Length: 189
Image (cartoon, rainbow, N blue to C red):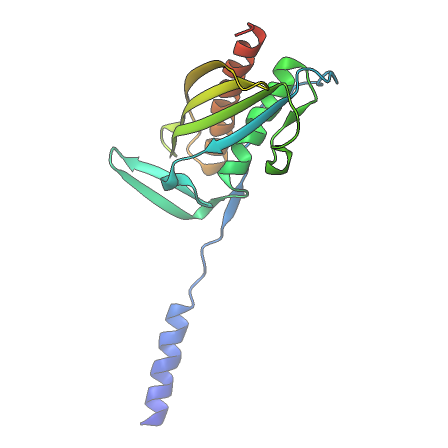
């Protein structure tokens, strides 16, 4: 009897020990410029950035229907979106404004800068079929605390049906947000 039980348990354990799903990690990035001029003006801090709680996780949240999402255990973000989004927008601002003084880390929040850019991400939708949608509200504040300008950018980018192209689509959508903010700064308000 003990032998039969041991064979049964061994078979059961072997069935449970199937091949685990391989996780893949993705980053957000903005399109790269040839070179960024090393001007020190203007200085800009990007933050705080808020994202919807539904997508504020390491797993990619994939929209599968109008009212349905799938939290992917296989496709994951390599860094928190609250860190990646300001980094990407900061890269775009640096490129578009020709300044090397764009700060995005929380530790830089107290440093003196010319402008502060706060961003509230309203939507950060991901779909392997449809691509990426980013809806961002942003506010540019001068160092003296007067609101200079507020705006909204809705950007939708297609993807190639896989997680890597979806991450790239999000990077392009966030680049558009950064270009809109840069255009506002260039126009003087």
